[in-house]
Structure formats: C-alpha cells, structure tokens
Amino acid sequence: MLANWMMAATVVGRMMGLPMLASAQRLGVDHAWALATMANGRAGFAMLALALLVAVAGGLLSGRRRGP
Image 1 (cartoon, rainbow, N blue to C red):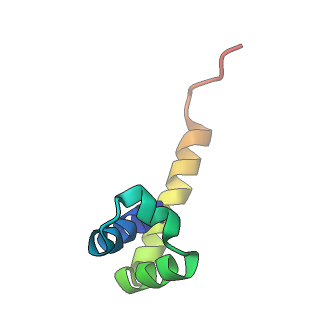
Image 2: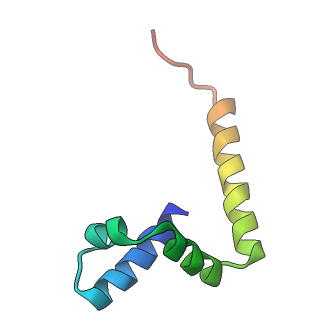
C-alpha cells in the first residue's frame, strides 16, 4: 500500500510541480485510497494481503535468532 501511495504522490506531484516527498505529505488518505482502488482490483488487494502474510510468516519462521 505504501508503494501505491508513493506512486500516486509522484504522479500528482509532477502535475503540481512538487517533489515526491512533499506531495506524499500533502496527499490525503481518502485521495490515496481512491487512487489505490482504481489501480488495484480485488485480485490486487488479495495479492497485497497474501504478500503481507508471507512476509510475516517468513519473519517468524526464519532460523535466525536474536543476539544477546
């Protein structure tokens, strides 16, 4: 979702003559959500959720242990 936010901020920022980070700070949650829903369908949101689950499971199931 953050990637979609940054892509929307880049496109809107170019039109307004703003750098990406300044545009991302001004981009409201409602506007970012509207742009994300137009860019992604149900399958896209399902893949985002699946990617989040895989990342969490990979982090929890990895063999690495924290140091002392």
